[in-house]
Amino acid sequence: MTARRVLAVLCFALSACVFLIRLHHPGPYAFPEQGNLRAALLAFALGIWFSRPRAWDFPLRRPLEIAILLLTPVVLFFALYATLAELEEVVVLETVDREGRAASLRLWVMDDEGAEWVNMPRAKASANGLHHRRVELLRDADWSCREATVFEDRAVVSRIDRLASEKYAVKRLAVRIGVFGKQASPDVVSVRLTPCEGARAALPRSVSSLQSIRTPRALRDGQLVGLLSARSVE
Image (cartoon, rainbow, N blue to C red; front, side, top):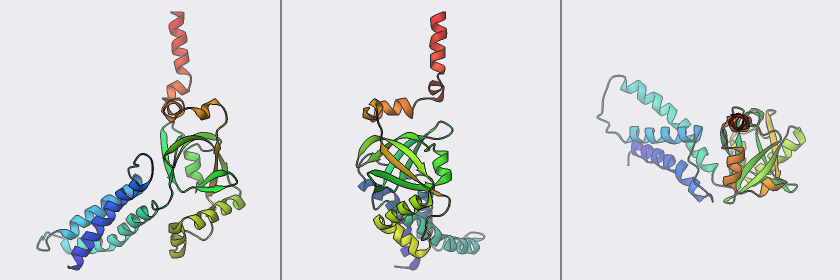
């Protein structure tokens, strides 16, 4: 088997793995998004490129081949990371971003002090409205309500980051090869997820989603009440 065929098989395999690895998680299938999806599609495109006949000639073929050869390790690295990141436990947080749109976040989760914790960049936590917000958590195929609280204290962030390194082998590998730093970066925050209190915490996900996440902004802003009041006056 030639080197080109080996590269083609490797690209096709990693592209498929990005999609297939998510099947081992309990609960509904989560289709790859954003960078993970781009890495999978680029790896698939590279597989097609390397499996083409060598006699296929066209202008600028040589410079393009050099550029693709330089790009290939980068694409394969991100496709491999997208696969390895899903090997261990991943949870899903559903919330509402600052524009009022439903957002679904896939995250590593750590258990500490009777609560679940996740780490993420401060900008991501802010953009998804995780400061003292009720969210829905998918873990072990079960949806449940959680109160999200953001912690910026460096001691807390470092502790959760250390727990993540102890739990996730891929994070330890990423630290070893320099993808992640040995310490959490200054822009990382920790989010504590505690069970919701009150009647709403017991609502089924389909009901709570309609009330908190899927509800259009007009209804959340109380415009529906105004419309009904106007109807009653008429």
